[in-house]
Image (cartoon, rainbow, N blue to C red):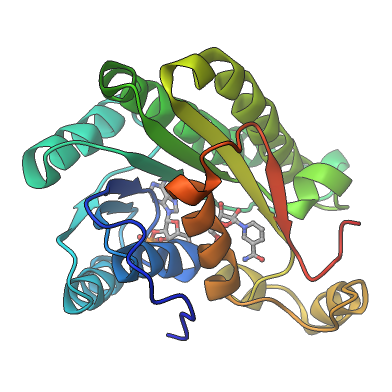
Length: 254
Ligand code: NAP
């Protein structure tokens, strides 16, 4: 793992990350841990990968807890917040990262393809956000970072469901940011471009080549590139930044 910022600017912070077993979420868990935060994270079913992430976070000196919790369930959202309170003593940071794709052209898209993607990517973020707002409002501080996508800004053929969920996250981010700014809570989003994870490994080779051709920086990004942006937005260094969408895309969306 090639984290370049070795400062402990998140020392004493308690974080929840959804979908932390693999890919970008895993890199976020480890970056938050590297910077001094303790982390509760969820995963959908991949217990082995979750245990690897948890053990690595602990090697970095963090308290880390993995919880099998489906983000589409309101009860699971409450149980994540309870776990953060019981295991870490509270919650200062929420990263809504869990996400899935069910790609098809709109004309052929099944109801379920649409509903499952919205339920995980958008409703899941809403449920977790609602669950952390009460403790964050009580302590009058907190930072929420939502994992949007360049696709939520530009659209993408074959991803009407996914793009709608990621555009929806931007609306959620800005609306909640307005509601809670005076309570000391900041809400921002990152919009990754093409990042090398299992999600993009599933793309056909021709589609990957076409995607990379659109990136001014000329290559895919890494999960760590995204994790560093998330950690910054979660930190007090971003104390006057709220309601923003930070693209981490090698220049793709400009
Ligand atoms: P990934 O490698 O497929 O990992 C997805 C993670 O989410 C896994 O930890 C998975 O857990 C978890 N997850 C899936 N469904 C869940 C559910 N219902 N409840 C709880 N956890 C769930 O994906 P990724 O590429 O790292 O993407 C992470 C986020 O970044 C997503 O929101 C994605 O849309 C966004 N993003 C990715 C890219 C990219 O190029 N990769 C670009 C822009 C945005 P298990 O391991 O248990 O399955």
